[in-house]
Image 1 (tube, rainbow, N blue to C red):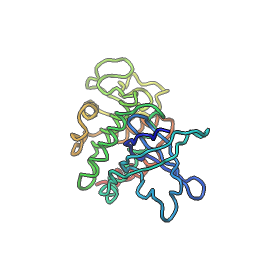
Image 2: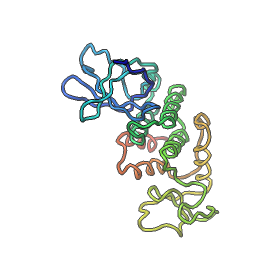
Image 3: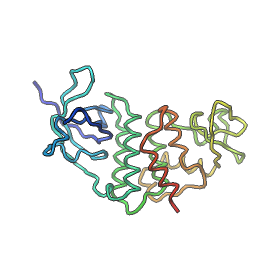
Image 4: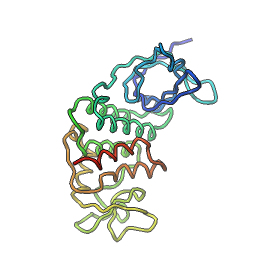
Length: 253
C-alpha cells in the first residue's frame, strides 16, 4: 500500500472522543477542512502534544473508511506552534476566532488554498506583532475570508440598487449583501448598522490590500463587528470564539 504524502495544515478545531482520543479539524490547502482522529491524544505521554488550535502542522493521515468520514492521524509534526500568540490575550482571541471562521467557511474535501493562505498570514502576523492587534487586522481578515468563500459583501456601491454610495445615509446589512442606501433598506434586512462612505472605502481597501498593510491600520468611525455579523449571517450561527473578541473591543480604551 502506498504511504500517503505529508501535507501542510493548520489545526482549526478539536474535540474529545471517548476516553483517550481526540478529533482534530485541520485546514489543508489542497483538501480544505479535514477531520482526523488522533488515537491516544489525551494520554499523559501522548505523541500528539502541541497539536493546539492555530498550530501549523505537517501531517499524514489515512483516508476514512468508516461512515463518520474521519481519517486516522498517522504522524504529525508541529512546524509552527505560534508561541508568541499564546502569550497575548488579544492576539490569542483573534487567532482562535480566525481558526473557527476559516474552518466554518472551508469546504470539506475541496481545495481551499486562499482560505488557508489568509489564515496562515493572519497567524504569522499575530505571532510577530507586539501588543494588541489593530482593529484593521480583524476587519481585513473577515473581509478576505468572506471574499474567498464567495460571499464578499459589496462595500463600494449599494448592494440593492447598484448605484454609487454618495454622501447620504448608509446602512450595513449583514444578511443583505453589504452596504445599502437608507432608502433601499427593507424589513427583511433586519438589524442594519449605520456607516459612512469613509468606513466603506477603508474596508474595501483592506479587502484588496495585502494583509500586512492591516497590521497598524485604524478604521474610520463605523460598526466594529459588521463583517463578523456578515459571517454569522452567512453561516446561520455565531462563532463561539467571537464573544471574547467582542468583549476585548468593548473594553479597549
